Image (spheres, rainbow, N blue to C red):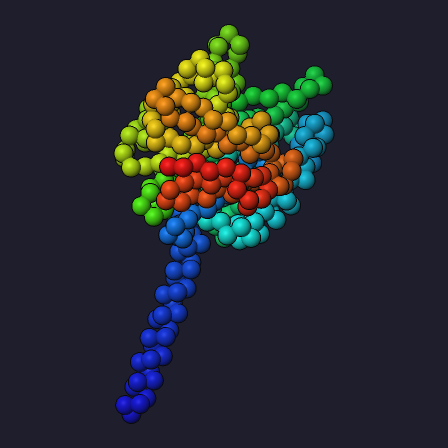
Length: 324
């Protein structure tokens, strides 16, 4: 009888242990819960996916105009299902132009919007979390008239509301932050919404454009802790003219030596720039080319206690390192 009790007790312990392991495994895979190695946290950076779902539903001339992006679903699906595991990455960040358009005109003249819902559903099948920023195409509307495509961001707020409703990373808005601790170093990843660019020449607005409330929020995020290392994620990158003329966004970022890196896309080219600030700091801007044009346009970023390692496009081989 006692032997039976011992076996019963042991069986109960084993079941509880296995259940705990399963619960831990599920928590690791759940969006928002990142358990990287104690000494390294790695993620993949992609940008400018320009995915289009069911292009033939739209006005024929408009569909033909965007035909170059019609085959983007399958490559993205393959990336979602395989690349994070292949590279042993903890999550993926996609910096804008996730879809080619928010809404488009149909043959009947009505505007049809279902792109982002399908995009979120596809990336939601990933075993690791996806975090997004919005690009100009994610808030754009397309119609057709007088033998040309008409583009507008007049429905940008409608688009943002739809993204907030459907994508869990936008649950608190289209700009947000995430904190990850690697060893003794806390990293604050700050996701900006800088995709709006529908300005007239007379308005003389420098891009990338970030509105005043978001700039105040950004500065508040940077000031929340003296220990954080900040990484900025956005779609439209900084340009030399913005830096040289003291654009508002760069003016905020350049005040803080804790801001180490910007990850962006938009111009469909890979590149690295270093911007020097008046306080002697250096902000490195990493641009990753368009995934829509070449599926090897991805980078792996590794965060360690003492540095940030950036891979070559389409490779895990290190291209550069930012020491902290």
